[in-house]
Image (cartoon, rainbow, N blue to C red; front, side, top):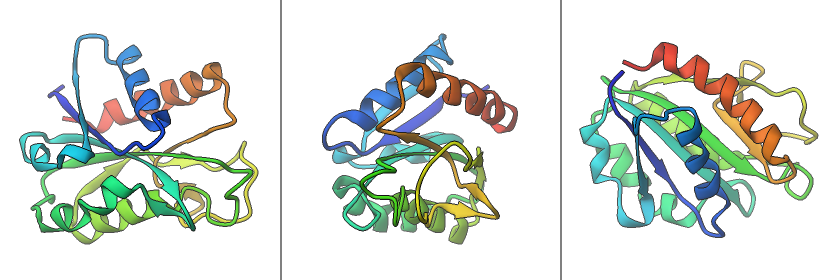
Length: 167
């Protein structure tokens, strides 16, 4: 498998902590990590890409991602495979749970990128989520309320699926 570019936005550090757990499942340094506060120009160097964002406000992407969305829209993504991670709080923001994830997904879909890693939405308590398509989340969803064991369990199952799709 080719190297994976992991691009994440983080404000309080939770999303960064979540994506760094990917190292447990890719032990041979298959992942290279990029904080999008420094830009997303490196995306062009990868065919396998993971994008991660927390959601803020009424389900918007994190501020650093918001500043990079037009750059993402300007790239040719049609030959790349993407997987998405959303970090959120189902109890405080259940009306638009992990909505920022859908913003990223919509760009990828419009750019005809190949998106993998949809996950079941069971085991969560929320009212609505823009990040659901065809009754599944458009990526791995990690809630602030999850224990470390829960995060690793969900991540393990998700990684096994995306490894089948990554080149």
